[in-house]
Image 1 (cartoon, rainbow, N blue to C red):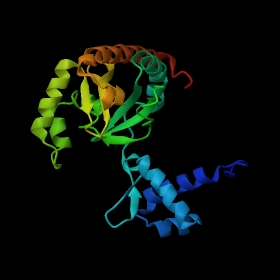
Image 2 (cartoon, rainbow, N blue to C red; image 1 turned 180 degrees about the vertical axis):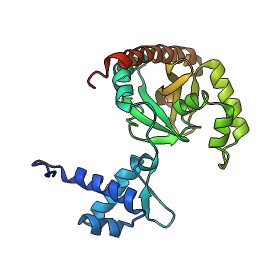
Image 3 (cartoon, helix red, strand yellow; image 1 turned 60 degrees about the horizontal axis):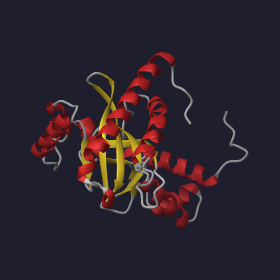
Amino acid sequence: MKNKPAYSIESVDHALRLAVLLRQEGPLRVAEVAARLGVARSTAHRLLAMLVYRDFAEQSADRRYRAGQVLRAPAGGEPVAQLRAAALPHLRDLVGRAGETANLMVLQGDQARFVATVECDAVLRVGDREGRMLPAHLASGGRALLAQRPDAEVGALYADTDVDLDALRRGLRLIRKQGFAVNNQGTEAGVTAVGRVIFRAPGTAVAAVSLAMPTARYKRARLPEWAGELARTAGLIEHDLAGLAHDGPPPLS
């Protein structure tokens, strides 16, 4: 038997209950959410808006809310806690060297899921993306990961979509050749990112690391510099992942 914590945070409890409702019971309207949670409609709307922002929910054309990509997506093959433990120290170092926000992401179906973010301290910067999901064929890390998949697998993944498969395959071949991917405002106006894959073993891609910046600071001439920083960071994370396989994960900080 579980007892409610003595110092529970009511808004968090409401959000978690709402996520469970959306996953188990299907689409709900704001009024239905308010009634089920016993809150005002305005509160229900704010809870839903936050879940939508973090991709735990999405709104349909009929104005009902349903479970979002985070709740629907299957778990990835690599333990996220282990990836974060290996990556976070190196993401912080990367931010210190490059002066831009760094992200760690994994591939889930045709989506790239952000599992860690370290923000830079610039006033104008790309903010925290942790927990969010973006189309893999557009996100820099997602494209870097897709480039490691066989053409047939990529073709099957996008067979019934409106994605230009020929153009995507051409882009993935270039990414394999140059070793990094660029997302220049493909997912969000004013944001540009450069991503590189992380390997658990030769030929086994498990995640990607990216640098995200305001497009105003993106300079094509600096691509070799950023690609080099990403390669250095990916190599360090790969080294630590190999160590975790033997020693177990260190505590997250």
